Length: 241
Image 1 (cartoon, rainbow, N blue to C red):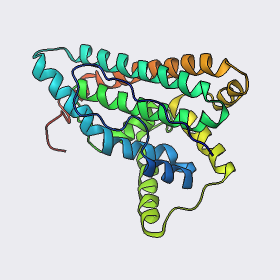
Image 2 (image 1 turned 90 degrees about the horizontal axis):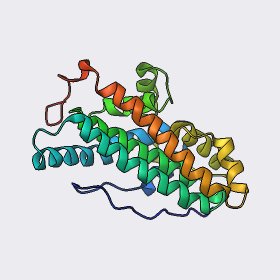
Image 3 (image 1 turned 180 degrees about the vertical axis):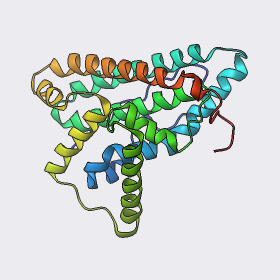
């Protein structure tokens, strides 16, 4: 299966060293071999890989603009990653059906980056393991934190087993299951996405609109969660976890 790779996009200033713009190869391997827990694998890897990036970004932003309001930082993060999501939708939409799995995977990864950056904007530690739980609840993979934590524990165990015994090879059916799970995580209707890619030109328009709309909706839920007063004294960036 051919997997087109979207181009990297420039990030909004100020920036720290960026994490990977798309799911790394090792994560793709884990998700293909274990599509049932693909969202959990992605959430765990996102916090490991992208949490430090979000933390550095927030620290650099505050160092350059002391006193900048959290709402403004959150707005910048949202704008940056909605634009990235829109771009990836247009690129993968032009790639046709083979790009469907890659598109929703890149979109889910981009959305995870946004959530972690918004958390950092509100002073919440984006490297804390609880952020993986937040990701799964915010992206509606799980309804409550308790079931999300349980699933993350299972995925982490499978990850360790895969490292010891190797990953099984993926099949065409596996790719379909993976696409559906990742589309669910990214807030995009998988069936509509697949149909759109079969219509010449429709994939570009649908990809741009769907990615942008899903990411904006997630940004709204994320800001509602992290701006709440109970978060203020807890797990701020730079404090111990």
